[in-house]
Image (cartoon, rainbow, N blue to C red; front, side):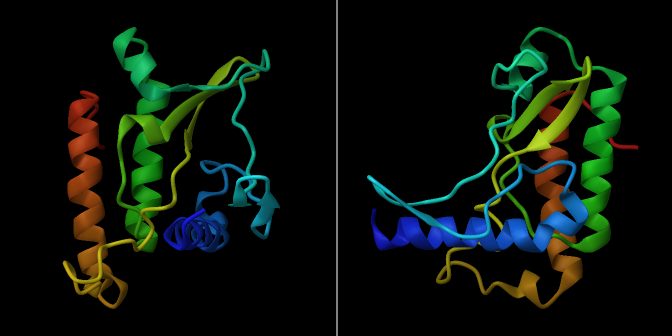
Length: 156
């Protein structure tokens, strides 16, 4: 694995450890360290599965099937509110990163990609959002609002 791949994995692991206090119900469980695999260093995390044991589907599937419920909308709003309240700098909000897990017959929103946690390119951005929580909230608000509009969901 390329060194940049290892740094990405380490960044995701660090983000999981930092975010787990606030986002525990949304993110998968991670092992506490990178492991050696036959393909190089790897990150071990929980596979999000439904009640029947199959991998949970992305939220895009539920959008395509017109199955976005008020419960899913409320969970998306709660996720948004946690990010805003704690200025958690996660920025990659696309439909592939959100899963709907069916657990005990009910849909549960899960978020699966923490690699974007504070991952701005160093020469393009100054990473000011690390020092200015208001800037982090502004970036989060803009990007998550774009996703919510694309899902035809409305924030409360």
